[in-house]
Length: 225
Image 1: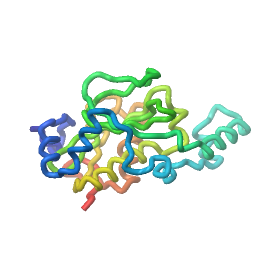
Image 2 (image 1 turned 30 degrees about the vertical axis):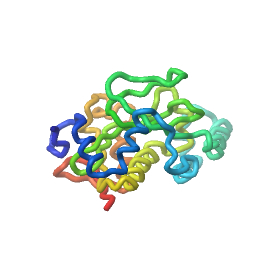
Image 3 (image 1 turned 60 degrees about the vertical axis):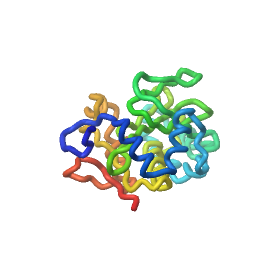
Image 4 (image 1 turned 180 degrees about the vertical axis):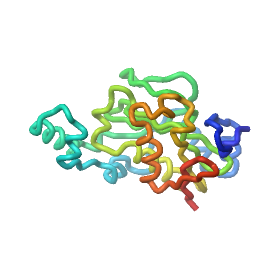
């Protein structure tokens, strides 16, 4: 079984650890069935949850987001972000590791790990967060925005929202700890090389969600005890 905490080791999954965790935490077993069948997440209200992550960009923020637009168009885009209908967002469980998979509209998510929460907008995949169980709790090695769905993600701080979602879910399950894999240890060169601002999705979002960097374990860690 892989030791996720060994410095210098990149992430690999352990199916055995999932079984051991389910034995230690009986509340997880019904949840694993939801992952298997792809149920809609309903443990708490997602639109209400996302209110804490709604963006409210000021003038400088809009300039960073839309550098090629004029001021009038930026303000219109800003209004669309500030007034976005959060009721169009939902989350579903997903199970499966290996090849990428698609929704009915051909929006693609990669299957890096078995367990994933998928953020949807109008029932279309917009982003995903993947995690696995370890001997100490939960490890998040995958945070992915869906290609060509940036517009649906603009109104919210989606990477932070997904990290918080996993943390809240883990706490309800009685899991003692959640950790996020730094980009430097990610399996994919695109992520470890910070292509497309991956550090913001992983390292920065984890820090802003209260995770602390453990230099010995080389992980961002948050205790839920």
